[in-house]
Amino acid sequence: MGVPYVPVLGLVGTDLLARRDDMVVAPDPFDGKTLTVVAKAMRPDVAVFHAHQADRQGNVSFGYPSEALILAEASAHVIVTVEQVVDRVIEKEAIGTFLPSILVDTIVHAPFGAHPGGLTGRYPIDRDAMAAYVAAARDDASFARYLDEQVFGVVDHLAYVERFVPDAIRAGVQRR
Amino acid sequence: MRDKLTTMSDAASRVKSGSRLAMSANLERPPMAFLRELARQRVRELRVIGVVGGDLNLDFVVGAGVASAIDTCSVTMGEFARTGPNFARYVQAGRVRSLDNT
Image (cartoon, rainbow over all chains, first blue to last red; front, top):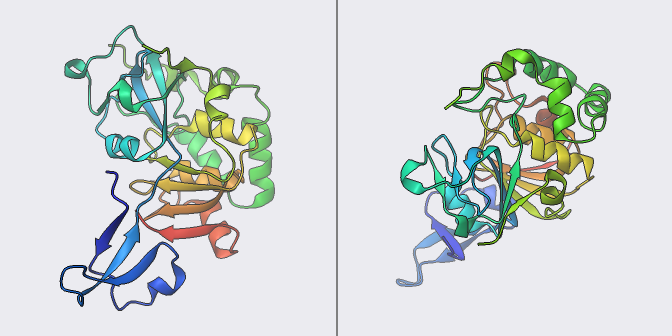
């Protein structure tokens, strides 16, 4: 949105502000007395999304509705990983959220890039892989082993797909 | 028009340690391949912003040591857990800063 801060009426009088360095209490600049909380705007350096399709110029058809537009406008650099790179994405044929190329800096081809999560309209959540993730995340040692196997143990995303995305999930891809 | 298609490795290198990274994802559509590459490149100390909230994506960046602060309203894991196990463990031990923001 480009605004430097946002007034918030509801938080005045709470002790939450003692723990926050991004919110202050300030008087209304018009009447000089009504107190509001003023929250500093967040300016992400990078926003990253995973979507269905993009073209090489950076036009993106997300395939689902999302908050991507407002985040892309707020962020200095926008990266979108996609299931498919196509010749041309145009707004009137886009499904769900459309991001125009002017808001997008970087496109990466990453089939099954949401795994072990799912991608609405393409493939389901990998339930077995999610159960394994949750089990591994129970303590530092077991999650370190998980990272060694599934992150550091594969050279890149294509190697990850070969090794960890099961056929049943791949079969869930809906051809258009 | 500029050709914006690049490799995962090159794209991940645009995220500098200590910077702010925003996402909008849950158990559907998390950019996991990208987040795994951030971990491979040993990106550290990110402030990660989940709009609105997040699931697997936020729990992963905490557990992988990529994030030192999380702005979110929730970290849910659908039917798989009550919350992100890494996120809960790190917050309770004071190892990651959690801000109720989004």
